[in-house]
Length: 72
Image 1 (cartoon, one colour):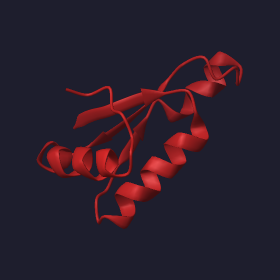
Image 2 (cartoon, one colour; image 1 turned 180 degrees about the vertical axis):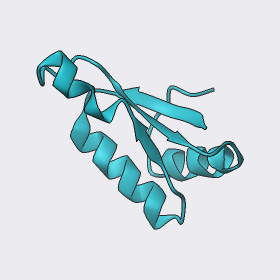
Image 3 (tube, one colour; image 1 turned 90 degrees about the vertical axis):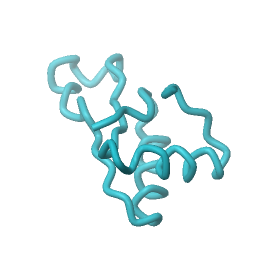
């Protein structure tokens, strides 16, 4: 798995996940259940990742939609 980005914005995360799924990719949201430990303060960023072989395509899909990614 390769990480595309980290964010505390769950709306953005949901949107980006939908974009990737629409492109036929299977993204994975990591750290999604950390809110239980943090008391729902949304302080711990969630990570959006894809399989290694899908990384280039996923990055292209998100960048074409105007997203700036943390990943190199």
